[in-house]
Length: 120
Image 1: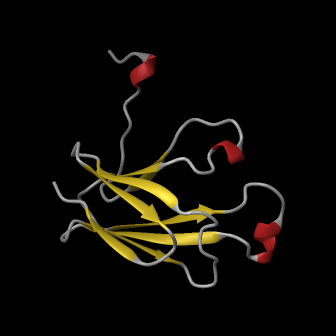
Image 2: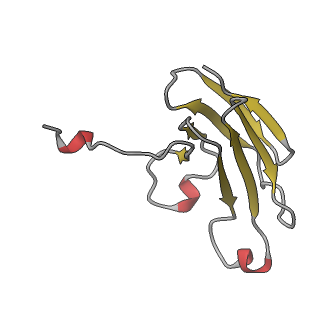
């Protein structure tokens, strides 16, 4: 038996899940730390998208997109801005953790390529 407060979640090996606080408005997320949960077992890729949270400036290219790539063999998560997008408007506080490990790495991502070892 599983209570409604503990619904099981099945995640594909190699997934990268961004986690953050529960918010009711997009601007409430601004400046909050994002936890990236990496589920080991396969290589993975994910695009982290960020914009102002209001208005339509994103239609004119005013947003940032960061490519995240998990290298399973090396245990490394790489972050790099996608070409043609602006850097984040403010550094993004990240906590990176493998889902099978309690240890985490802290990173303040400002839009420059970086690789982080997230081993056991």
